[in-house]
Length: 131
Image 1 (cartoon, rainbow, N blue to C red):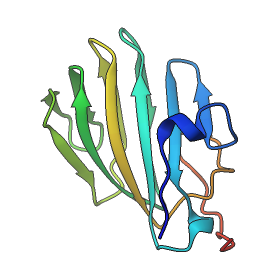
Image 2 (cartoon, rainbow, N blue to C red):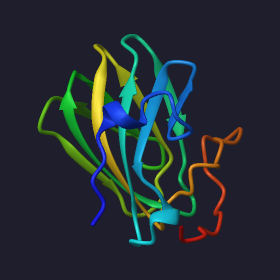
Image 3 (cartoon, one colour):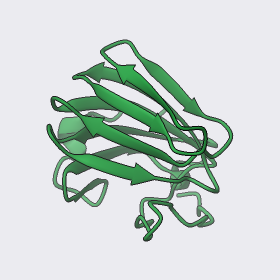
């Protein structure tokens, strides 16, 4: 059994931030469960482009409002608390946060925590070592 709190991982190597975003990586590939689970916040007024070529991502918006634009199909969706989206075809996408957005995210395959977004907003595929 694994029990963690976001408070316990704040300020550790599982707490990763970049310009306009922060990701608290609660479950990582090294935990050996086949997925990773993150709490991600996007700062109000910011916009970010991502393209997870190697990962399927499911996102549940808990707080905040904004838009999600599917850059592959030129469709924009309004996001509010309770919205969920699934990037099951590795869609290139843009998030715009009208207010601060807090999301719970699941990645498959799991991320290891060592990935850094590349110039396309993608994470490389890194093999996880079970801890």
